[in-house]
Length: 279
Image 1 (cartoon, one colour):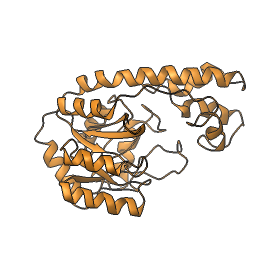
Image 2 (tube, helix red, strand yellow):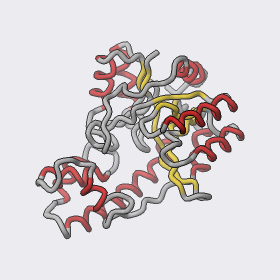
Image 3 (tube, rainbow, N blue to C red):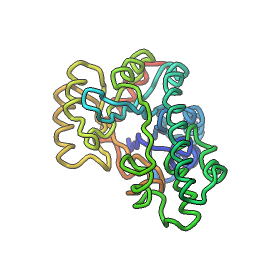
């Protein structure tokens, strides 16, 4: 099966709607897709229903933001097939609220330097379940201060090293894994190469806290992938793949379907997921 299991819609910080992502996935010949918006499952039912109509498998998923407070490194955890999406969303809502508050504070500081209005920003953020840097940067691009949304101006203003950055309070990776277990979901560590989390991956796998790892991803280097494969084989983890699709809201765009699950791996994920009843 050709499966891309990491995609973002405008319900978080992507450009396209859930329906557009599912439709395009079918059009390019994918057999399976997952919408993994940041900290929200708002598009899960829409994606699943449309997938049923179009004849493309849709795996319910979400990308959960967290921090390993032992190392102070970000950890993104993909959760697939959660049994209780409402309990999981209740946990995630705290992050959505924290993100909204932080981004509005960033926007207010930025508006002291640039002639952007909150209304202009909300024209882009109102479809999302929270506000993101992309929604703040898009008006700057509209007004001619940049020709791209995620570029040098973004780095200067809103990145973690930017002059207007405000820290978001994220849950610990331990708390995230705990709630994934409580809702009977499948925990898959996302792009461990990006955050130098291979040691953490091995530790979590050893303790049976994760069931999979994202292998094919644009920010996993070939060296990372060799190490990921070694850990996955040693601890019998499912290896997934995904493009981390955002449309043009990214510094390195890739079309849907650019990074797929390794052969035979999505079938393992579906087999494990079908043992759960999420609807």
